[in-house]
Length: 405
Ligand SMILES: *[C@@H]1O[C@H](CO)[C@@H](O)[C@H](O)[C@H]1NC(C)=O
Ligand SMILES: *[C@@H]1O[C@H](CO)[C@@H](O)[C@H](O)[C@H]1NC(C)=O
Ligand SMILES: *[C@@H]1O[C@H](CO)[C@@H](O)[C@H](O)[C@H]1NC(C)=O
Image (cartoon, rainbow, N blue to C red; front, side, top):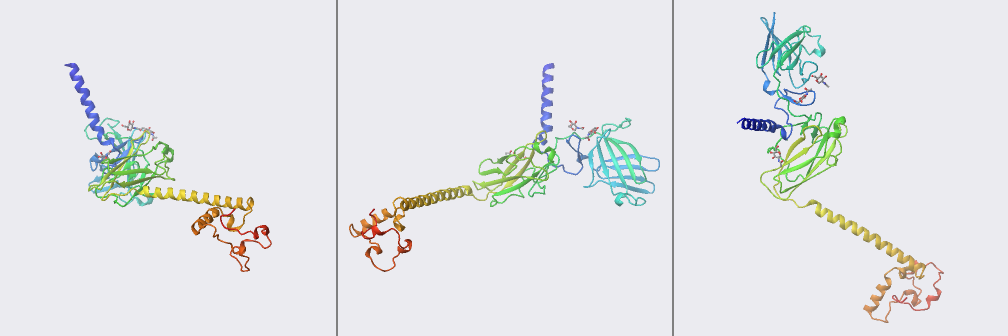
């Protein structure tokens, strides 16, 4: 009985662990709101479910109210004073010392705080303690404000204790992936953006687009953690995907020199629904970066590289042939002029064969006489090749035909 209980407990724990981890296995997707932070070892903590949650602290003249990830205000008989708002330019960061996280609220009411930095109005800082107040006064399950300190008329410091969300995976902060060297449409700060976290039918690459280039950047000091990307296609038949570029060769990206990942694809089979191209970039010590591109294949595409490669080989062979023929021709010519002491057309290699052929065709004996052999005074076609007074004397008298040596 005891052993059975034990076994089932272990099983339960295993199942719970697996289930609770499942959403994070594939990649780290950007949270649904801007109400999230990284703990100081880069684990993401998503507070989206806390947005707007009300915390009140009763003071002597006024009450302080925090609306989580929205604003901080001080309420009194005369109305309320805004002590800053949480917005996309906020900061929500890991704390130090006793507080685990720090939230900044800016741009509160300006009246009587015109001297504040850059006319930002009243500001608030909320130090979040995960768990209980240090004094232990917080009894409720959803936390409470431990203390409120007005540093001035225009700035308030609040200590808030809440049961923090369980931290998520370790995010490779600072990493970006975009379609341009200075953009981050796909991955920003290590978080996969909406539309690229899973297959997104509304935005697919067209059939005719043969490749897409992605640019990646990382903080220089961490760039060597980035490893070679890999690709998976769903369904895994019908779309040929090739990765190339500096990122595919394992070049570490930095902020100044993005690495390039060229995704080349070719439709081998036409299909109604787009293909899912899952790209994973492993990062040492962090959750891998993962994003999905969708690709249409309305028609089948011929192998682009095949014909190009064919022509390239043909070109190289032609070139080699040309060079060799030239060398052979020149060599032959030089040999004949220097060693056999032939001149002009006679010295051209192959001329003897050509001449023999002509001789055969036109009938033996009826040779093709050279003009100068006929002793005519007419300027011959061949005469320009021969400098006057050259050593041709002995051969002059003998009738020569092409083909005779
Ligand atoms: C951040 O969260 C992780 C995961 O829970 C934890 O192991 C780590 O200790 C946390 N880091 C800090 C500095 O609190
Ligand atoms: C990390 O958090 C601890 C405790 O919250 C703090 O003491 C430490 O200074 C933090 N480290 C960094 C690098 O911020
Ligand atoms: C690609 O990613 C999607 C979404 O994360 C997932 O549903 C799918 O199974 C993945 N496909 C492959 C082949 O890994």
